[in-house]
Length: 276
Image (cartoon, rainbow, N blue to C red; front, side):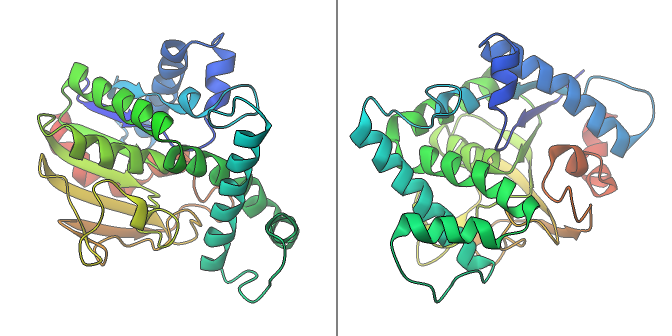
């Protein structure tokens, strides 16, 4: 019996398009892949680990390349500025361009040129999707509700949330206190990223500290040492109730993919009790 619900991260809109603009089809395609990825890490006989992947990427997009509820040039430009600001604030964590000033658009173009190819490709997905989620309240509520409804429908023992999905899952679990989860496993989480995500969380941190959702019994956070989304990789300094932190070394190129995280042996001792 599948006892896990997954919550995906950035850059998954292509699943929606490939499924004929079907969120259900996108979720099922991702579930099959995540089952294979997790099997690599856990071994044994192939099986269905995930009941469902909570899919929300389509809720952050208006079209093939658009983010947010534009509805015209002015909203589009506003969203572009929000994404550029996210990019600048994120890049400061990498020590890139801290002392550069100038027009925001020119500055962000300069930043992308300075980044190596893997970081630039990541930034082009991360900045607009994070901006769409955090600055468009309607999109945020719909995304959070989609994750909450998936958890409510499947009643999993475990929620595995990757990347931006850890932010959506965190807020969904806080917003719906009836959704009881034995284990929240966050992978490559940007929840603690200051000036980008942390201060904007709902509920807002109190005195510089967030808190484990009260309907979650145990919280395990795993981050790759080279993951530029998981800044800082450790969450216990920012959140009360993180039971286990583990820094891993996955792959210096694929530093943020769900495939690498789910195939990591570090997940085994935390998941094994739920898979007997």
